[in-house]
Length: 238
Ligand code: VGL
Ligand code: ZN
Image 1 (cartoon, rainbow, N blue to C red):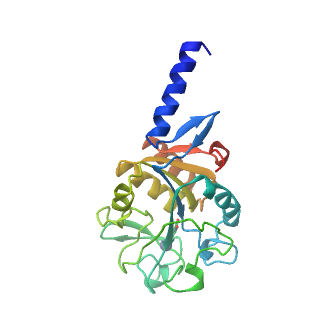
Image 2 (image 1 turned 90 degrees about the vertical axis):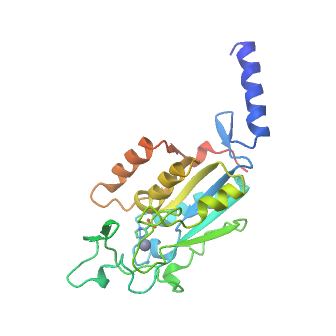
């Protein structure tokens, strides 16, 4: 590198870090004070033996545990449904899991009963170790409406309060991990962009359900909305 551009990029790094924005040093991202890690729905339901086990779901846990020390701010989410929730196939006669139905807000995929409030299935995976997390946000608790996104419910109007919380704390960038890539992770990442945050999905800290090609479709939609796709190795160790 030429001396001038080296000086320039060094100055830019100093400026970004003093602003608390993510800094790229030696090819690694240092999240900084204005970034938050979001750990989406790492609940027993999605892990081995759960009601909606995601293939390889358990494998995200050591990756997330190792990432956590690199983040000053961490938010954890829990899918938190009422019994007989509108997203459960069992709530409709003649419907089976993974079929769809039309609800007031659009097409709803119907799932097996999962993550009912207060059940073991809805608890965070016990191997997940993110003791410095500051907020646990629960979603999907309105009987008639689902909420894949941690920011807004399926009507795309009802806020969970997460955007306001992050903004009130000066957070500008979110790094999203957890389950499932093609549902709650993707919707959270896209709504983060909509709410004005810079958004990264850490791919190897996620696993997908991949229902009828939904995983590839989710990556395309996320990329189109400016979500960045990175790996845990891209983040500087904390
Ligand atoms: C999710 C399906 C149903 C998710 C939640 O967390 O991705 N997927 N409920
Ligand atoms: Zn759910």
